[in-house]
Structures are given as C-alpha cells and as structure tokens.
Amino acid sequence: MTTSVTGTTASGDSGTSGSKGLATGRVGLLGAVVIGVSCIAPAYTLSGALGPSAAVVGKQLPAVFLVGFIPMLLVAIGYRELNRAMPDAGTTFTWASRAFGPWLGWMGSWGLLAATILVLSNLAGIAVDFFYLLLAQITGDDALADLTRSVPVNIVTCLVFMALAGWISYRGLEATKAVQYVLVSFQVIVLTWFSVAAFWHVSDGTAFDASAISAEWFNPFAVDSFSSFAAGISPSVFIYWGWDVVLTINEETKGSATTPGRAALTTIMAIVALYLAVALGVLSYSGVSDGAHGLGNSDIQENVFAALAGPVMGPTAILMSLAVLSSSTASLQSTFVPPARTMLAMGHYGALPPAYARITRRFQSPGYATVAAALVASAFYTVMRVLSEDVLWDTITALGMMVCFYYGITALACVWYFRKELSRSARACLMKGVLPCIGGILLLVFFVQTSYDSMDPSYGSGSQIGGVGLVFILGVSVLLLGVVVMIVQRLRRPEYFRGETLSRGDSTSGDSITLT
Image (cartoon, rainbow, N blue to C red):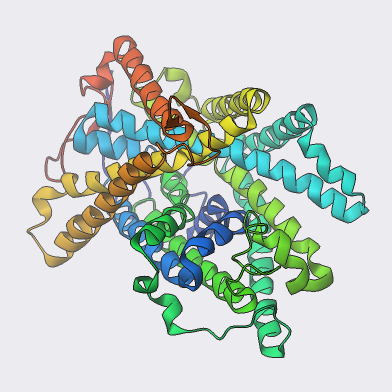
C-alpha cells in the first residue's frame, strides 16, 4: 500500500503534517521562537564563549560575533525556502534525500543526530555543575559545589536531569512550550539585566576597566592576524547553533509552510542582538587586559559570568547562576526535539526501523524516538564520564564538525533542489541560489578547517593517539560509525535506498513523496 504525501495547501497547514501522526497547529510564531532561543541556550553558551573568543580577537569580539552570524543567516534562508516547498519534520534528512539522493540524505541526518545526542550529554553535565554550584551559593556551604566531582553523584544527578527533560519532551510540544516560556524569559531578563548593570558601572565610573564603545570594535579587519580571526570565528559560528529546531517542528506549527522559516530568521536576529548587548557590556566593563576581571585573564575565561556576576550585579549575582542553570536545563529539554523528529521521519520513510515512526496516542509526539534519544545520550554520558572526562569533552568538542557538515549539506540541498527555478526571477536566484550557496560553502569550509585544526594534539583536552589529536579521531569515528549504520540499514531496509519511499527530485519534477 502506498500513501501519498503531497505539498501544502494554500494555508500551509497541511502538506506532510498529519501523515506521521504529529499534532498539527500546536505552536505559533512566538512559541517557535521561544523554543529556538531555548535550544541555542544564550546564557549557557555565552558563559563559555565570551572568554575564549575575546582572548584571541580582543575588542573585536562584536565584529567576530557578527561575522559568525552571517553564514547562519544565509543557511537559515535556505532552510526557509526548503520548508516552504516541503514542510517535513525530517528537515535535513528529507530535504537532502530529495535533492541529492538517499545516501547523502542519510549521512546528513546522521550529522544532525550525532551533534544533538552529543550536546545532550554536555548540557546535562553543565546542568549538574550549576545545580550544585547554586545549592552552594544558597546554603553558603562551598562543599556542595564539589559534589559534582563525585562520579557516582554526578552520573545519578545527570540521569535525573536527562529523564526529566525527556519526560517533558515526550509529553509533546504543549508541555515543551509551557516550560520554555518560563525558562527562556528568565535567562533573557537576567542577561539583559547584566548588560544594563555593566553599562551603568561604566557610566558611574565604577567599572573594572571602563572603555567607551568604538566603531573599531565592529571592524573584523582590525583583528591582529588571520589565524586569530579564524580562531575567533570558530566558536562564534557554533554559538548560534540550535535555531533549526524551529524547522523540525514545522508539521506541528500553525502555518507549517511559512511560520517555521519566519521563526528561524526571527530567532537568529533576536540572538545576535542579545549577544551583541552582552558582548558590548562586558567589553565596556572589563576590557581585555589580564587583570583580575579583564577578559584577557585566563583564570576567568572558562566561565566569564561566574567571575563577573558578583562585581557587576552585586547581591543579585546568584540570579546569573540560576540563569545559566535554567539555560542549560531549557536547552536540554528542547534539544530532544530535533533528534526525535528526525528519527521519526527516518522511521516513517523506511531509513530506520518502523518503531521510530511510532507516535504516542495521548500526546501525538514521537515517543519512541524521544526515549531512544534519552537512552543513547544517557548511556554515552555514563560510559564516557566513567572512562575519562577528557574523552567526554573531546567528543563534545568534535560536535562542531557535525554541525558544519549537516548545515552545509542542507544549504546546498536548497540550491540543487531549486536549480531549475533560479533563472525565473532575481528573488529566486538570490534566495534559493546565491545566499544559501555562500552559506553552505562557508560552513563546509569551516568543517574542513575544524577537521584539520583538530588533528593537532593541543586541540581540545590535549589528548592524542599516535600524534593525532583525539578530537579529530573521535569526530571521524562518529562519522564512520554513521557509514556503518547506514550500510546495515541498506541491507535490512533497501526500499529507502532504492528511492522507493523517498524519491529524488527537484522543485519542478511535480512528483510526490511516497511511503510504501
């Protein structure tokens, strides 16, 4: 029996929606933006990105943040155009399969799955760290903060966080959205408060190393060297990762053909504005010296907020710890959304076992895939935490390779899928061709560059095997594991790989996506 999955209606509310059993019309534009911001986790991301970025580019930190924003914006435009034509929860998997065929589509989805599963482990671990730090601050007992160093305590607490986040995600987007409104609002308010307080200290003459905002801070060519610029660009690209979650919920969004694309662009614009406000506030307050609170001080670069919250926010500094905790917790929960819906689509089209296509009757969510993501992430964190914390963090560092890989493939899929339309109008050429092409090429270049840089043993924890950096070995191993799993699925479920369930085509072919 064959079920036809056609394009959207004029309203954009049908199309593939409902074909997989997901609840339709559950999330509007604001709800999607909130989920997108939560997945990016600005408070958590900035806590670890401000210091390392400022260390290599100095006061050009805002410029680097803006440059890193550009490829994300270009790729998001490509996502928007693909979503208008094919609103499908599989996103990268479905779109790359349609444009390039089953093999590249499968590997593109593997990059998304690997990145999200790895970052789930990271987010859970960070949530544990800040949970015990917050308890120490509340009680005044510094010993509580050290509980995170106990491997059994750390693992058990991490698994509790993972289970709670998975449970909320299992209950569907209604539960997800309700939790995210609270957690995202809180962290945005605290980050804004922090920025305003930093500027107030500058104007009051009580800042550590007060500096007036200069146009030179926005000039990327003012960075000392290209190597420093490249080193600063790397983290500035990855701090925007996560906005594509709003596309994976397209089948559950009001106006599935248009709202997700608008939400993606709105999310990125909101995030870059927030990042610039915090970056300017920190630079104005701290400067880039190696003094006690300067951004050049290596002792505070690992977590800038932990060092500056007290001097900047005074007695309310505890709110920053709570904001970072809520940020990592919110992101942990919302990050379950992309892998669950990608695996749902893969099960739906026969690229994974049919169990992954199961939908919970009560919540109309991909329950089986959500539980699978939680179990894999929990098992990965447990094993890596017991074996070696360095290996755990090096594996997480390697996720940058996965992000650039699947974003780049998806952006170029837009160009190839719409290739026969590019000559029809200037808008089509620009939005469906030139801009996504530039974004995709840039990210694939970053993928190659990051892969090359990670071969250096000094990259990441400094661990190596045979003189080759462990980050590179782990990143390549994860991709090769994807190839092995893909071959196994090809032997067990050949229909997808023969193009019978998800056929290759383009925007003018007029054929439908079918499920056998």
